[in-house]
Length: 327
Image (cartoon, rainbow, N blue to C red; front, side):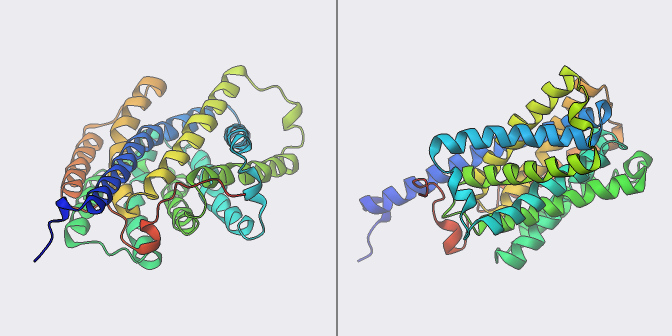
């Protein structure tokens, strides 16, 4: 006789735990979407106000200060220096923060935030390819079709002249998601045993140190020059909220949900918010073609999230990432 799983207390507990994990992951994905929508606007603002390298250093430095404070409070700061983790954490930091911060801010100095947001929609391609190659996540036909719909919507606006003007700046922006996704794949192999908090902290602390050295070498007088209070506030907000909170919520999401599914949920939701932020804070205006492309992309997202299982699929991915701080 077959036993009804619903009548089994351990089965009910397992289902409740799975539902809770998915719910927390979805909430973190939503936070990530909002914060990610601010990133192109904040970096575009900083790139126009001061030297991009200086603004990147201020922002990443602010994120590092917040991360170090939180990790010091939890007692996990020493985990970042362990020889069995430090080399891999350093690589995650260089790919996920240093490379992306510099590529994005220098690219956004020459192209507007709305065009930058559209170029960043290339991320689902990188996500699917890397997830298949390294995480052995197998996308379904529906997922591939939905992602193609999303990218079709973004591709429909590529004919707009400002998207690729100048080309090198657009290339810098469109390459940024490749480094983001590469760092996410590396990070997933460290969670567990590391918590999302450790991953976010390592990304900014290591990158802040490297950026500090770069500024000392490339701009020896930078730290003696006065920086406008407005720029300091914008850089601090970018670091503490856009970078640190964004990374923490992202790692919390992908430690509970599929990397490709989470990316496909977050990335198309960003343009609508980013366009709103760009209109409010930068005075930019999207054209009809850009709006139409985003609406097509949103239709692809609706197709995706109504038919794809958000659960992480491999045994090591299914492990809970939240645990007691490492000693």
